[in-house]
Each structure stands twice: as C-alpha cells, then as structure tokens.
Image 1 (cartoon, helix red, strand yellow):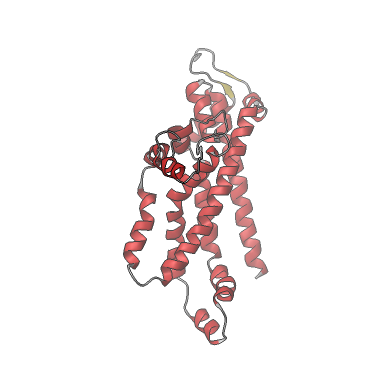
Image 2 (cartoon, rainbow, N blue to C red; image 1 turned 90 degrees about the horizontal axis):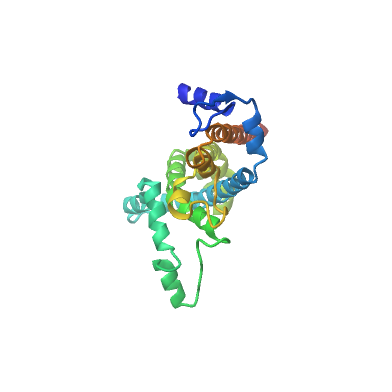
Length: 266
C-alpha cells in the first residue's frame, strides 16, 4: 500500500497529464485549489454524502430489524438466513447491470408491471436516479449489516434478559435499555465499515447512469475516474482522492469519538 499512497501524494502536487508526460512539473497546492473550487467536484461530494447517509441509514435500520426477527425465528431459520445473505455475494457491477435492465423505463420488468396498475415511474430520471442507486445499494449491502448484527445478538449474555423478564420489562424497554446499549460497539464498527465502502461507490454509477442524467448521480469516485482516466488530469484526480481520504478520516474519527463519549457517560 505504501507505494501507491506515496505516488498519489506526489501526483497531487504536480501537473501530471497523461497526454503531456514530457511536461511534468511541481505546482504545489494548485491542484487542490482547482478541485476545491470546481462545481463538479462539490456536486460529486454532495451526491456522495447524500448516498452514504441515505444508504447506510436504511441498511442500519433494516439490517437490525431483520436480525432481531431472524433471532426469534425457529422455522426455516438457516434457509431464511441463506436467502437474505445471498445479495451480498453478487459482484456489484453485475448488480448494477441487473437493475439497469430491471428498472429501465422502456424495457424493465418492474416499470412494466407498475404501469399495469397505473403507476409510471422513471427510476433513472433526474429526480429519482440517486434515490434508485441508494435502494440498489440497500438491496445488496443490508445483508452485511444483518450478518454483523446477528453475530452481535447471538454473542450477548442471557442474564440481563432473564432479569428484565423477571422485572416485567416489555419488548421495547428490553430492546432500548439492554439490547441497543450492548450492541453499541457492533453498530459503530458496522457503520464505519459500511460508510467507508459506500464512499467508494462506483460500480452502480458506471454500470447504470454514468453520472447522469446531467451530473445528478456523479459520485466522488466517478469524478476521480473521469478526471484521471477520461480527461487524463492525473494530478487533479490524485488531489481529489486525497481530499476524499481526508473527509473519510474526519468522519471516522468523529464517529469513534462520539461512541467513546457515549460509553464514558454510561
């Protein structure tokens, strides 16, 4: 990992275009200034933050709910787990291509049957395209949250639940005062892992929308790809990547600090 990181850092401070390799020179922070003032970069960062917040929040809620249900399930328990975990093992680019055809306004199966009941939805139109990508990510990666929470729930001690049952605590009180606090560390780890992965979303955008319509679904990784490998501005692409790493590190540190502060108050 050391060489790619070091080389990316070197690139970020140089004018490095693949079409002009004979004119590589040091430019200092000029690439960072260009990126920070580029409306396309700001739009891509905004889209990425919306995607991460929407996808990870839904995956957390749905994954925890399914984990609580599966923990209580006695009939077809292993079969249900296998079915629910299956989407996680499909290649993201294949998932993107699959939903590209399933949700296509003209050829898609889902819009076809929705039109039968009078519902017309352009899933990849300007208003819904980013939301559709969020739903696709939720379909594929909620199983990861489910797996994490199932492991966490099955590792919890039984004594507090027995005491709560004796004291007459209801399901909600038991969940909010016992299960949720004891799962806090698992939730934080799951959030960090999924948020880090969601920030790198590229395959769905590449396979389905290519950043469109317009730039409504252009994410930061797709922006870096276009800047570096379509427009050949490798210095600016490296600067954008370093800025993304910085944003991710800040968010991870804040999340860990918040979790530690909550634990200290308890």
